[in-house]
Length: 203
Image (tube, rainbow, N blue to C red; front, side):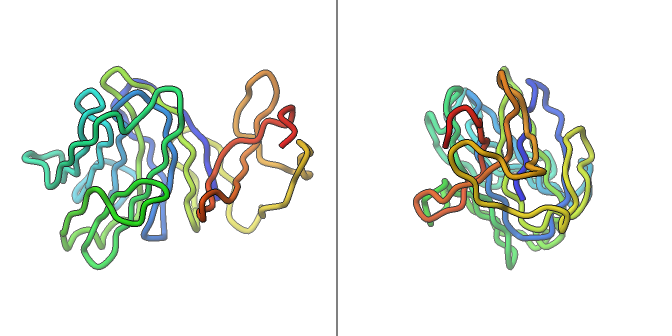
């Protein structure tokens, strides 16, 4: 299912459970989109942090347990945009953590660590002068978040086709922009991308 949330310019993670081994999301922020992968809904060990667009939107890193040196780093100039959603994926399996861009098969960062197998929660935040809007597609979301954001338990909702701006009964509201915004998704370049639906746009 998809969740839509905003994070302040505050390096404080909002944690959610995850039972799959991947995370796909889109983020609109000028810099410093941070994702933590942990074994619980808190900052404990092990904790793998993925910093995208850090250092004034010039590079990205993977860091373990808040310790330096970073496990992996990559030069990623202008990877984020304050006015446009940019999509990314994170996958972890068989002791390998990889980070890539939406629509690209090959990762731009990877690391190897046996403790990756312990990951069952993720957290997101922004900071260093940046706030952010997130659209997160999480397979098998199975519990409430540990920070404010309304989620619906699996099994109580389903995806429905909709066109022309009409919303199916019980559509999940995800925000407000002069009118209610609803959680939606669409197929784009071979991937199922989460997003928001604004009924007046008539899409």
